[in-house]
Image 1 (cartoon, rainbow, N blue to C red):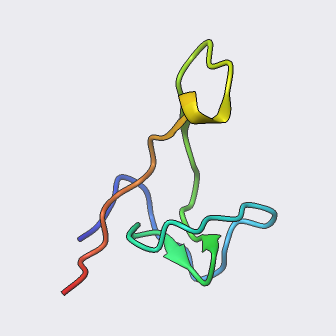
Image 2 (image 1 turned 120 degrees about the vertical axis):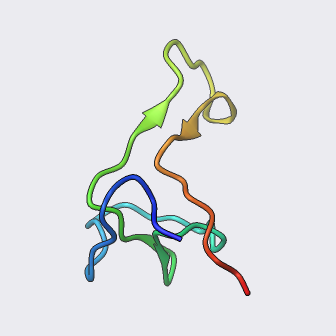
Length: 59
């Protein structure tokens, strides 16, 4: 499965991600070309969401 942005060979420097079910995940780092974090007016980290997330094909 592909996501909305390109998956890069190298991770985004400084962006840690442990969501191993994401298409862009690689060894606890994000390999998306760009990322989008939502929601406006969030007051806690629990209120945020990675809009770039795309489920990996976990066959």
